[in-house]
Image (tube, rainbow, N blue to C red; front, side):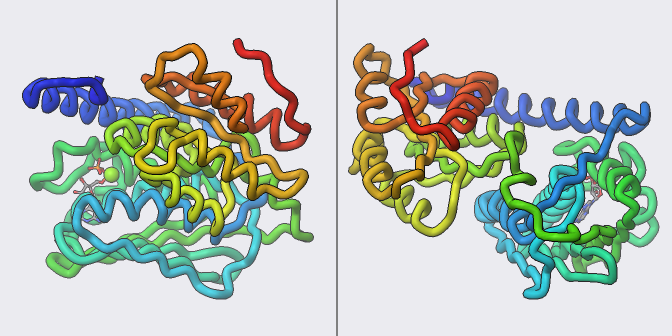
Length: 344
Ligand SMILES: Nc1ncnc2c1ncn2[C@@H]1O[C@H](COP(=O)(O)OP(=O)(O)O)[C@@H](O)[C@H]1O
Ligand SMILES: [Mg+2]
């Protein structure tokens, strides 16, 4: 709806609906997580993961948010972090995102730092902000459900985030503590026992079929925000760029599981970008590319496949369509050689 012509009032209402929807979803997910924990049904799923990559994914998500709030987000990962650890990477990420989101939400000026250090038998994460601080008297109760400090931001949350963090950290056998003084910022410290795998495991294991690193190439910021929201809900990490050249630059310096490519981009269009990506690939390489387009013509899909794209989606998209398309292209193109696919 937001990517269609609307008058300013309708646009505001629609944005409010989107904000409310996002909040409602967050609330529902938090309530479900707590209910699962309470029912003893939340199970940790330890995998081998790369701590540095996990931190970078968190930083990537938070940097956008920080930028929008005029704050700095600093990632300070110690040089001696182990290359691999065993742990529930998704839940660790959830804790760090919750704490970093809080820090960004309550801080008006300055910066938020995510620090990671090695400790005996595990890692210590610190989320440090230059925000308002938390009065000593309320510090302990904030880790309980529905507890918040009075303030203007109160209504933008439910007071469940820290309770979930504490429960998850407890389940992982770790600890979480808060050090804060009014007007001097807050530091949340999470210590987790995390074993190193006996021998390095193949790195493809941790981020297997569930959690992808995706490049989204889309010039419309609202459409991009919607797609990013849908993907992040599935816990994928998304890097967003607004044009083809930025996409090629991004691809040259880091690796992705798939690209979501808008066909109509300013300058170099999606077809040309797909061709350039394919030209630069060596044998055996095949980065899955999914076209995401508002076009409704019936030749576009064939043209997209000609240009080397593996999937084709029409806007507006649902989360389910995205998940299915990703499963299809990542499942089928990463190992097998590409064969022309039938359209369905
Ligand atoms: N970094 C922070 N700086 C200041 N206050 C914070 C910070 N993190 C959490 N708080 C306080 O703790 C309360 C509980 O946090 P949380 O459980 O995540 O709930 P929510 O974010 O939904 O309000 C917040 O409402 C806020 O009052
Ligand atoms: Mg919160």
